[in-house]
Length: 287
Image (tube, rainbow, N blue to C red; front, side, top):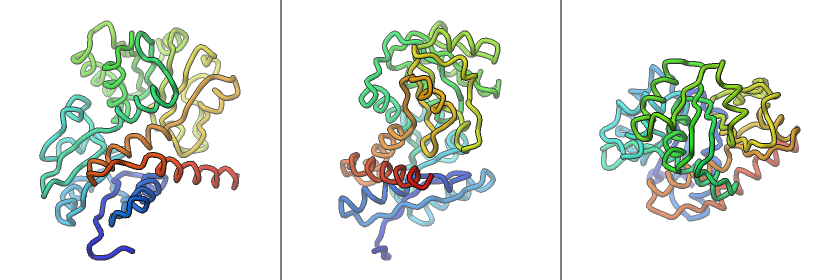
């Protein structure tokens, strides 16, 4: 039961109707008997500053930040964690008595999903990363911290791609980070061990495959961070019997870290995953 004592947290994004975060967090609160509620809030870019101020005014415990606000929000907070500073993007805000602290749990959640759940060894691997937005930034930083051989970085927005490449070179080396235009992408995929889609392509069921399907071979492991649909990329991977994963593991693991930051309680990861898996089964059954 929600009362005047219920603590509120949530997620800001635009659009936001697709988010499964309320489902998994509210299941976790219920499992631990915590008087919390998690809500999704549609926040247009022009309203972001006002929405961040509202965290204090409404005494929210904290919020997650998603597309398209992860980078813009960094300038609106009182403090950034070392992780968020290195990445240049925030996906979690904690309200510490009116002081808003930005953190980023995306990269840690991604690595946990890739390494622990999918049993992928990263050391010495060649990786193609598609997307230089907030999620791409966190994934790129985390990959370089895990001793990959080379990171091929592609984004259709040239300025964004080059900006991230420059930032990543500051924490690794010139040789490890290679920004690519469309002309170099095909060869990079042929050489790569891992292909990661961190773009929004695939968030709509009508979206095409983010790369030419002819480039996909069984040498690759494919990870698509989109979790609410089976993207065209993953459909092609499964058709060709290529090992792959969607972003459900990343969603659960990054959310679990946020949960602990807000509540101080150890996150019930199995409960969160079960809630999302049940939802996916229901959606699949409905066709």
